[in-house]
Image (tube, rainbow over all chains, first blue to last red; front, side):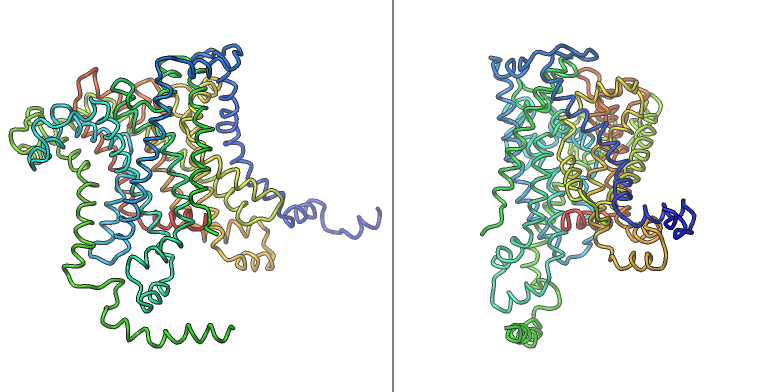
Length: 310
Length: 306
């Protein structure tokens, strides 16, 4: 004991400091504290609290009693069928838009990967829908879909694609869903394109040169070099995009808010309508929690489809 | 085996320049017609579809009330441009307040998120300790938890903290979706900085914290800029939380104010609405025109290395 203190002639505070900074673990955890603090209070806690809310009859500003699976039973057995409609719509909305965003995103990325004048400007312009506040651009779309003064219909009538007065975009169930999907694809494609472009730019050019020497066509180069090497990016982008589309709220809320006749009702909107204007927070939480197992299924399917071919 | 592979890869290297000559230096250099069909026409079509809504937004905002609903002549041009809608927006509505609120919330929540995620990103990418990988995955997974799942329980949290109708409600909740994203992106950037630089500083007697502050973080500035850009845009765009936590007209943000207060019942003031939408889009659009390369760099780090 005595020899130990004599050997460490350096001041105790300094010695302790050296010891702490020498090993990486304490600093590592220390640096995580702010992040874990914020995420713990405003993400993990609400998530767990939400699970509890879904099994109570809580209302806005009033914690309710435990009612077991009553909220889930209410939704599943409700005869109006809006809940099942919302589940189907959510899958349809996610599936259809993802396919289009994927295809168009690939095309856009391939185009942006070429050499042409004003490349920087074109790239920035094509990125705009993804950057501009969703709610604001969706207001512009709503004005373009106006039942009587739709500029889209004016264009379609003038190039003789449809007869006057043209389709009522947001007022007819099938049209409204299609309109919702079109605008989502319009907004989401740039994200795919820019991520794919980032992935394409790190593919070594020698590979293409070698393929060209071997006489591969452009299509063969695309399927045998670009696509396989893009797989990791493809995976991440698809994962993020399917989840965000699956839980999409703001776009559909602004454009249709479930109307007409709940034909564009999505789970996110249905949860909001019960929870906030309807005041039944417990029920709303139950509906939004249904998203979670469904999300897991979607993620599993995406991962399965993109699994490494053995 | 090794000799053989170098031989085969070296051989085409000799022939390649000859084979490539007629194709010019570009990736694909063909005749103009081929390029037009393959590149220019699809690009122009994409540009037209992409930009038309913004064009329509701008054109509408400069039209007078009577011209707005006059489709007898082409609605694609403005005959008598007017700034009346803008004037009305600034004098008769709370739009200036909304713009100020949006900016405050976006800037402060971006700063908070950057502080947290720079530290967390460095820790997870650079320091070796038990659990680092699983915590990294955990933070990535939290990014996959959408606000749609959280907004209802969060109303109780915000009520407990007495933050309803208070901008702090947004400043504190936005980091929940900003931090995971920024951390994930910054981890990619920190991993790209050679370890040797920091190790050299440690050998020269710097502490671990000094090595982080003086070497790793300055080198990650492009990544931090990209993360800041993302965070700012995401908070500028956010809608759901601000829709629920703010009811008082004076504390609203642009997206909520525009959708709720410029529509009176069934009456749409499209001129004013589009003027507000345009003004609300300008800050992020300007930011991007300056930093589009950082944006792409951030995407590369996040998407390719993540």
